Image (tube, rainbow, N blue to C red; front, side):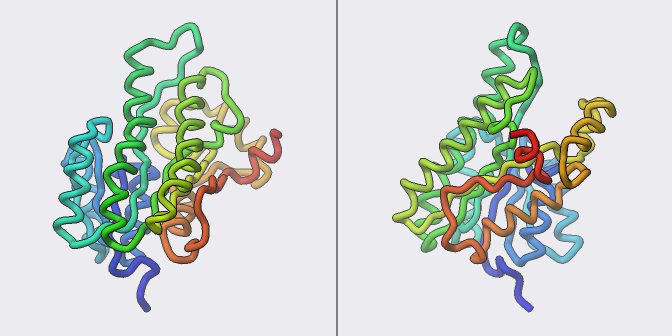
Length: 252
């Protein structure tokens, strides 16, 4: 049986590990040809090689999403190589948690350039390619933090709130081209990176706050992205799908 994305061409940014890697693998399992983008080409290609070994179609590409020209050229090359472009997942993020008094220009600039500007550059580059293919789906990775706010996370919450806002605006603007734009808002996802920077005490607290009693997995988020990327959601645009085990509801 054909997958839900058979014949489609997709790109996922920040795809060498964690959520991006799981999302790329699931889109490929659904039949898409997936370009995995990350800062270093060998990081991205290592993840792409796993997809290829599992029978999927993938390529790893080095690209700094904060570089508008580089991202435009990279997505254009994907389109040229495969004759179409259908799905973009804006997942790349650079983040550091700092209290208000400690926020530094260099960390704020990098967070905004990757997590905010990079999403705009991705949508800007993808839109004409998708329009030429008859339409497409853009999925931006936001965060439940955009709704809740977290201590020491002013910059992160601000960037992700910006992603939520630009998603709604882009949906209104791009709908006439048959391009849908939605966002997924995860809560804490159980990854190696999270385990490195979040204490066991805080993880236990977050699990206790979550009605479903666990952290999210990368597969939980990837499945939400798949829904928004494929035709199952073909009348859904401008929405933020919160995938948090009920956390935001419990804390609201």
